[in-house]
Length: 126
Image (cartoon, rainbow, N blue to C red; front, top):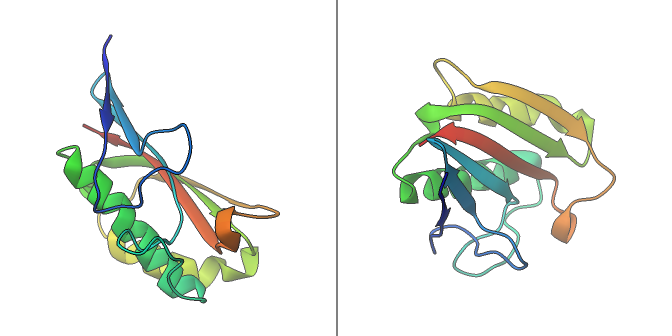
């Protein structure tokens, strides 16, 4: 089975030895995105709602580059710096997945890259 690397400048470029996404077996596996502005490389916002919106925008850009969309997401994993942000994050998240939301796991972590408040990775249909 072949695997294809997905890359777009409309989302933050990798800063290490990983790809934004891999297409394999009809599926897309997206690396975790933090709330970076792809144009500046800087963290966007200092509140969970703003950061969640940017993360979802970055993920949507990678999916679009792969010929997919948020409607084709089957699983997300959300990493939160503070589980007290769950409700506010969930409000923004719900706007991206209005119908048939994907399966999801949400965990609190000790620290995220760039001290972001949120990171999200996902799996989607290609």
